[in-house]
Amino acid sequence: MRLALYTGLILAGGYTCLNPALAADPTGDWRVADGVANIRVAQCNGSMWGAVSWEKQPGGRDENNPDASKKTRPTLGMATLIDMKKKPGADQWEGQVYNAKDGQLYSATITPVGTDQLEIKGCVMGFLCGGETWTRVSPPIPLSSANAMAKGAPKPTGAAPKAPGTTGATVAQPAPAAPKAAGTAKPGQKGAADQVGDICLLPEIAGFAH
Image 1 (cartoon, rainbow, N blue to C red):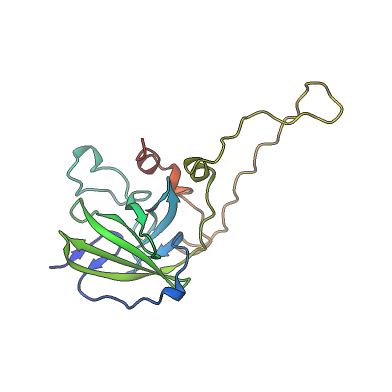
Image 2: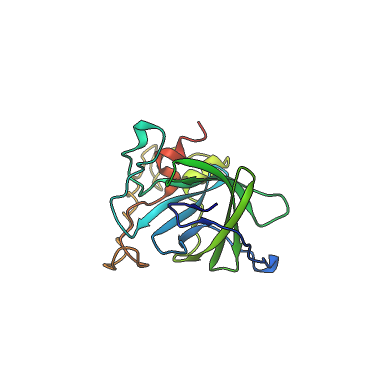
């Protein structure tokens, strides 16, 4: 039996041997093996999540989702790696993967292999397991402010600091500069303008913990 995921994951037999010494950060953008999509992996609410950050064929829709209300949702920005928890004592995360080919969820694991590869394994009903390796196309992602708050960091108070020598007056803080578009590379190339951003802020992911 062969299960082809939208993300490019092929659940066909065979595993890659892992070297624990090469373990690395799984966050960042990864090109799936058949090149049809990039998956952005980030730590959100204490778990690893992955969402489609680029498509070779733009305009995809989640047509096979059994939920009729989701059949027209764009596949760009759609969560594919879902609520993956780190396994104690191992550089591996386990959770679920969404298969847009049949609209179903399957158990899965992700394991960094060195700094530039990510091994994906999935299982159907606990057997018929297999996987493939994705290739890094962008560096690891720093923990976002949304993630920091989810992990218990204090939230900003919103009060601006007082100006030296004043009594009660506050100094307006400049708004953070908007991120620059990363060049004019073609879609899918490293440096292309980002259409997804921080996946932890995507409604599907941000609302999971609520």
